[in-house]
Amino acid sequence: MLNKKEIITIVIVTLILAFTISLIETVEIFLYTLLAVFLVLAINISAKKVASFYFESEIEIKLWEIKRYGFKAHQHFKRPFPAGAFLPIISKIFLFPLHSFIWMASLIFDVKPKVYRAAKRHGLYSFSEMTESHIGLIASAGIIASLISAVIGYLLGFPDFARLSIYYAFFNMLPISDLDGNKIFFGNIVLWSFLASIVLIGLFYALFTV
Image (cartoon, rainbow, N blue to C red; front, top):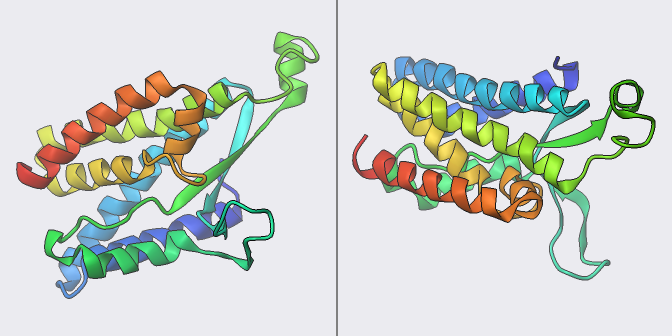
C-alpha cells in the first residue's frame, strides 16, 4: 500500500510536526503528540488510498514542494523548496501563542490511473485518464476522514487528537499549489465550499472550545 519512499516521507513529516507542536514541552508530551500526529496522517492518507482504489487509480504520497515563485515560466527555483518541511517550523514562530496551531499541510499526492484494470471494468478508453473531478473526490476523502476522526476523538475524550485533525484538515483545504484544497476546488467548487464551511466551524471550536 505504501512504498519505501512514501514511508520515509511520512515518518520525517510526522517527526517534524510532532517536534514543532510540542516544542519546549516534556518528553511524554512529545511522544503523545508523535502518536497523535501519526494517527492524523495515517487516517487521512488511508482514506485517500481507498478512494483512489475505488476510482481504479493509485496515489503516491510526497512531501509538498514549491517549484515556482511567480506566474511566468522562467520564475522557478533551481531546486524545489521543501515547503512541507519548513513551513511548520516557520509558522511556529509567528503562531507561537496558539500553541499547537501550526502549518500542518506538509504532504501532497500524485495520482495515476490503472489502465489495465480500468479497461477490464469500464472499457479500454473510458477511464484511462483521471479527471479533475476524480482527483478532487480522492482529496476530499482525506478531508472527510480527518473531520470524522476529529469528532470521534473528541467524543472518546482525546481533545488534542481532535484538535490536530481539524488543524490538518484546515491547512490542507487551502486552495493553493498542490494541496488537497486546490484539487478539490478545481474538481468541484461546490464540494470545496461545503467542506470549507464545515472545516471553519470545526476550527472555531478547536481554537476556542476544545
